[in-house]
Amino acid sequence: MICAEGLRKRYAATEALRGIDLDVPAGTVCGLVGPNGAGKTTTVRILATLLRPDGGRAEVAGLDVVRDAARLRFRIGLAGQHAAVDELLTGRRNLELFGRLYHLSRARARSRAEELLERFGLAAAGRRLVRTYSGGMRRRLDLAASLIVAPPVLFMDEPTAGLDPRSRRELWDALRDLVREGTTLLLTTQYLDEADHLADQVVVLREGRVAAAGSPGELKRQVGGDRVQIVFRHPGDAAAALGALGPMSGPTSGPTSAPTSGPTSGLAFEPGGTRVTLPAPDGAQSLVRVARALDVAGIAVEDLALRRPTLDEVFLHLTA
Image (cartoon, rainbow, N blue to C red):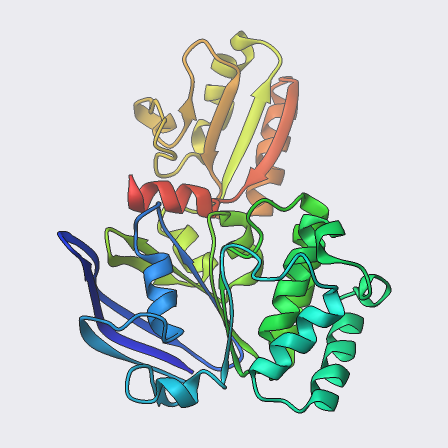
C-alpha cells in the first residue's frame, strides 16, 4: 500500500533523506522511529504529497506521490504533530468544515461529522468550542478530521506527543480499530513503547537512511535474547551466587556486563553490587532453573525476573 524507493530530499546544505526505501503492506502499521533530524517528518510529508522528493520515487495506494498528487489526496488522511483544528469552532463544526473542504455535500458532511464524533467518544462534547477540549480530546478530533473521507491510508506524525497515559491508550485503541477495519497506518513516534504496541513493522531512521527494519521482535533479537535478572539483598549474595549459577551461563549479556572467566563467562554482574544477569535461552524454563539453583544454594533474592530486550535498547544500539 506504501512503497518508496531511494527517496532523497535536501534542504540547502542539509541532506534530510539519503535514499529511503519503504514497503508497507495493506492493513498493517509501520512505525518510523529515529533521533530528531533523522528524516521521519520529511518522509511523511513526501508520502502525503506536501513535499516533492529530489530523487527516488514513491507510490501510495497505487498512485505516484508526484504525478498523481491531486487524486492521491482523496485517498489519504494526515494528522500532523499538532492538532489542526479551529479552537473558535465547535467539534461538530470543525468536522463539517473538513467535510466541505473535501467537497462532500452539506448533508453528507453533517452526517459524517455525527458518525465520527460518536466513534471517537466526542458526541457529548460535539457542541462545545474546541478551546474547552483537553489535549486528548483535541487529538481525537484531529484524527476524526483526517478520516472524513474514510481513506485507505493514514499518516500520523507523533500522534500522542504531549498526551497523558490515559489519552495515549484511548488513541491507541482507536488506531487499532481502524487497522482492524483495513486502514494502512504509517506513524512517526518518539515513544518506543508506542511502536512496540502498535507497529507490525518498525523502521529505524538515522541521518536520512534506514538503519534497520523489521518486526519489533526481530529488532529486539538483534541486541540479544531473553535474560534472567536477579537482584540480591546484600552484595555478598551476588558473589556467592556465581558458583551456583555458573553452569547455566551462556554468551555474555548486556553492554554493561563485567564478564567473569571460566564457567561463569555468560554472567553479567556489578562488582560489589547486588544485580546479576545471565542468558535465558529457554525463556521461562531458564527462570525456573535459576530459582531452583538459588534455593538449593540457600541464597535469598530481592527480585527475580525474566527480562526481554526492549525497543529502547534497539534504538540506542542502532543510533548511538
